[in-house]
Length: 158
Image (cartoon, rainbow, N blue to C red; front, side):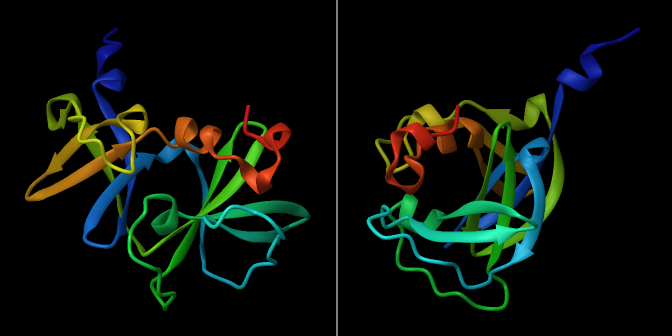
């Protein structure tokens, strides 16, 4: 029995923010929805757009363009919310568009350089190459657990 076949590849969801393409582990994704207006929360950090009621669950919505200090978002027909299931917490992240789900073999993944960017190397798991595309791989669980959701430390993702 060869157990390396599963360990040697990762299934990821690729999405765009501006000109860059990012990817997260598909297992963290609960669903993908079109962007809809949110209910603003007073005194929430700028990157928290607000909350939505998703089948009885209040879900904070994080604008990833603001989180990554990119230019202001324009919400259009391709703007989507990726709803993440992060254990005890459900959170939505607004991205420009979703590209596809792809399998990355171990040899397609390179270590991420530390470039001192808004996206700390703590949250980068590597760079994936698929044909001519470069995917910035994000540890979305670690990134979202660092987000102070709704301005209350006790509401942080465990």
